Image (cartoon, rainbow, N blue to C red; front, side, top):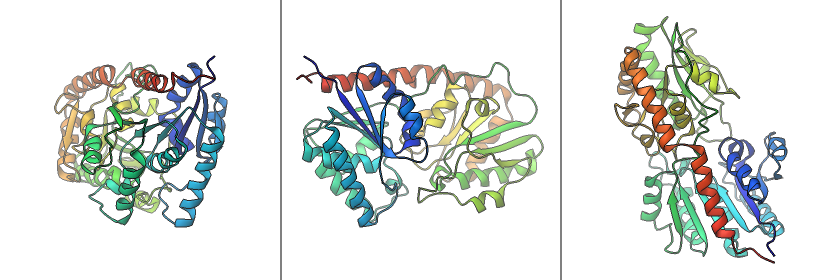
Length: 380
């Protein structure tokens, strides 16, 4: 007789799970899994519980490195893993992936690790002490049976293979991000008239290219103030070392031309009012905001960085520029400002690309097939 399969999903904070993995959690429930989510509660745990999942608060700092705090987080995770004894652990974001796989190796638990980008310590050629420790821990933790790795781009896989992190006994595959709900995000029925909006939707981190976006806007101010609005949309991520200073944003805002509208819980209207989406990020797994922009049928300007470049086919649904190349970023944006025809044609190609490559249903189905194949032998 089959017993209930227990899926433990581990992320660093509740809102990251909600934004990027909620659809996977709900699908697992539909497949008969008992789902427990382990993450730091920032006030949104009730949304997870209302969806039918158990929630356990995790005392973890996303960017902290203090030994006492890290040992506390590791011990808390170990206690939950041992108590829940899941059929499968699905871990996302770097700390849960590393700590959780170490614990799962000790407890002999099956693991699926979602590598949604390698994070702060692998951006900007950072090769410090913390990264060295991360690599050593991953080499040890990943060398275990039934450890499955899901990468969002081929470059992250290649880098971890080169660093000898991916073990010979690991099974891995590439899935393009977490996908986008093509029914929730769709093109506007009419093209917005009046001031043309150039939108940067992002968590406000320096590594996302906020400074580059601001400087590119300022290069174009003398030509387009009064006809174009550069708009930054997103929250300041105070839990990240790369958090943008609020003072910087307020100092550099130009009323009527360069504005920060803060976090918006409903992004569809924000996208549908925009004409162009820009993300000058330094490195990503697969940026969800660009998948959403593509689904809404918008032309995209981004960088040639890992993760970003997969979202744009040069000249077809947008433009790519080198990381930190402010003048080239401004020129690419200006090309689209000056051509409604380019915007319309590229926007249609963006939607087609989203339908062909980024459908959330396909991403979820891939995960469900993987989860079920790993746990299919669960019996009394």
